[in-house]
Image (cartoon, rainbow, N blue to C red):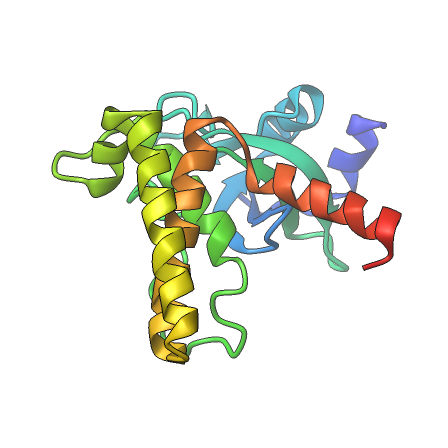
Length: 211
């Protein structure tokens, strides 16, 4: 990879900046919009930790240096006019300073496929809650109580799913399955198992079994 050549290709504005759209490599969700200059691009490509340029502070900043919500570079693209960048990243924690997974959470028109990546988002938020506890949080209550309490809740919710299915009540069943999925994700975070681990296992099974 010729970093100098890549930087030469990019058309920076009169301030020496270029906008960078940031996308989660797994969910493909747009996380944020930031700005980069030649130096931040070089640092990003060399170290694979995404570095931006702050227009307000007029200095470089590495995403997650203080919050721990880091971005590992997975892909770097520039558009046809070479005046904007697309970064694909592996996001740790929430991308937005508000604690939201993405900075683009103010919804004007809901997407038709709304919620397709909600499991990944929820997992990330649960992981962030474990790292940064919030007073009064039920999720933190479960983490504080430990594995036995989490397993007890998984068992209880599994029973509720069975009852919902036997009752032939779709609304009830959807509700109980959602409860079970939430508690399973809490268990996964507690045991350091990621959604990617489950996805990988299911893909391997499909390859082996053809289903």
